[in-house]
Image (cartoon, rainbow, N blue to C red; front, side, top):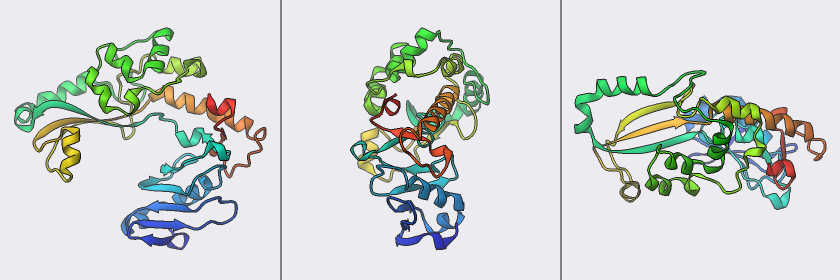
Amino acid sequence: MDRSRVKRRGEYIWQIERVGSMRVPGRIFASETLIQDMDDMVAQQVQNVATLPGIVEASLAMPDAHWGYGFCIGGVAAFDPKQGGVVSAGGVGFDIACGVRTCHTGLTIDDVRPVLEPLAEALFRKIPAGVGSTGAIHLSAGRLDEVLQGGARWAVEHGYGLPDDLRFIEAGGCIQGADPTQVSDHAKNRQRDQMGTLGSGNHYLEVQQVVEVYDRQAAEAFGLRVGDVKISIHCGSRGLGHQIGTDFLKKMGSAAKTFGLELPERELACAPIESDLGQS
């Protein structure tokens, strides 16, 4: 990154001062090495997000930030609905709900080490991965609506998780007010055979060992002990999320003038949070 675009504000804090139509400054959290290796487009996208209505305090970028779609990947911003704050399809992204979960196995490294090779082979056989991969779970339109409304609770009720799992997931794995009627039939059709699949890109399933504990209190809260074996899963919403993002990017782009929005780039298409489109 061109260092002239940022000013150091702390050991790991770099600021992009307000210029032009920016409503707030930009702020990047990174080490000296990371900031040097970041693409200049990260700074540009941080600046672009800072122009959106209702943004609070600063347009942020995390240490893993890299060029994305509208927002940089690793970009974070909060918007106040009482100040005309917006919701952006590009900001939400195309892999909606993408994230990493850690699954307890109840096993230790001594249990797993003798069977590493057959375990790896079994995981490859049982877990579909790759572009266009489909799984063993096939859902009708009605059942998919139940998934969209129930979230992780649906998975537990159908034997794909344990009731105790919900205690460790934000909001119990289901946000109130989910309305499947706002999701297009095309988006739903793309998901019917993709439940239980990893997808491609940087998604993964890894069998991991707890080697060292850095924060004992946090480790105890999460049930992590040295020698434990955990499964780390990085996945998202596959074709469903991508199609929802595509659908709402078009809707928000078409409605921008109606809301009086001037966007620095089309990928930041958005709508006021409290509008009908924003609520949908």
